[in-house]
Each structure stands twice: as C-alpha cells, then as structure tokens.
Length: 287
Image 1 (cartoon, rainbow, N blue to C red):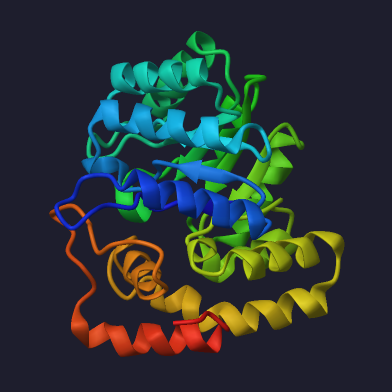
Image 2: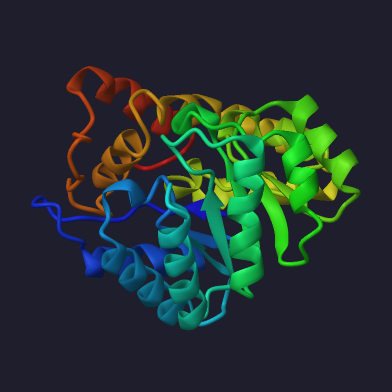
C-alpha cells in the first residue's frame, strides 16, 4: 500500500493534475491500496478542508478499483472525529489514525481516544504507531485492548520491531492485522506475520514493492529477499532527510511532480541528491 505524497506546485498549492496522474500510475503499477494524507502526504501542514478535498478526489478517481485509506488522525480527539466522519461520508474503505502527537497521552488516554472514535464512526479503522515522529508509543497491551472493537481492523506498526509485531499478533489472537510502516524492515515483519506494508518506497517503485509483498506473502522467500536487496539502498536513501523530502525529490526527478513542498520542510539538500539518484538507479528506477 502506498503512503501517497501530496503533489504541490512551487508555491505550495496542491497540484490536482499531478495527483490525478499519480493515481493512474499506481492503478497501472499494481499498487494494492492507496493511503492518502498520511505522514508522507504532509497531513501536518494541510488544512482540514484540504485533507477532506484530497480524500474525496482520490476516492472518486479510484472508484473502488483498489481500497482507499484516509489518514484522519490528529492530536485532537475532536478534530480526528470530524475528519474521520467526513472521510466516511465520501466513501473511504478505512481510516488510518496516528497516535496523538505532542500531547504525550497515557496508555489509557490512547485507549479512550481510539475507543471514542471507534464507537462514534462506523468505518474500519487502522491504528498507526510511529513513536519516532509522535513522541507517543502505543504499547502492545493497549493495542490488545483496542482489538476488541470490531471496526478496529489493523495496526500500522512503524517501529520495525519484530518481537513487538509477534507480541501484538499473539495477544490479539488474529483479531487485527499488522502492517509494517517501515520499508527497511517490512520483509522481516511480513515473514513474521505482518500482512503487508504501508510504504514510502512504493511512491517511487510501486511495481517492485507490489512484487516484494506478493512474493513474501505467498511464501516465495528467495524472490522476496532478492527484490528487497535491490530496493534496500532506496529504502534507506528515502530517509536521508525527513520524509517526504527525499521522496518528493525522487518523483520530481522522474518527471511526475513539481518541486512544491510546504514549510517547515524544504526540498532535498543538494549534498544528498547524488546518493538518492544512485539508489534509484540501483533499484531500476528511471531518472
């Protein structure tokens, strides 16, 4: 599943034409699902009305060909509810809800946050744990408590910790699915029970990420490892600076988007550009 970037013009306004073309590319490249306005989509600097408009545009264009998952999380329970309700109205297949950042809620606070959303909005929900960006770590015990809600169907676990993934799967007794949120460790997590990856790399190499997941989940470990080896340098280089800075530069070099990105993020520093270009070439991406 691609954690889709939000294409922008140089002045930071949303480039709807580029968005349309990216969606068409992903549909033809066998991307299995599209996650719109998540971390990679710069949700932190999008206005709520922009998030809702982007979600609606993607849902309409995809037209149920593949699932569309909307990032609707914030550090405000009230705003998260509103965004999730709006996403449901336009027909998303699920919502991805990041742990509230900056506030540093307790584990019980996290439970009550997600409980309110699950009980208020009848839409499938995927929890999203990425403590490296949020300063908030949702523990496996809290995920187990939340797995009792029928519409909480999965968790995007971006710690890359295999033991934690195994613990979540064991504790939740298959009530929810685990998705990797870290490309570099995604293969290992899938081989230990995760059912896929919500991927940054899929923005740049969607077909290969689809092939990697298909091989891993069908038991073709040798093929999965070969593809992953080809992609590993790209996995790493897409985080030379904060996501989605390198990814947007890569897509710009591929001729798919303009250079727009919103402050406080800036375009990729020149000192990293040759490294990323080399990683793209090694992964078979045309620059």
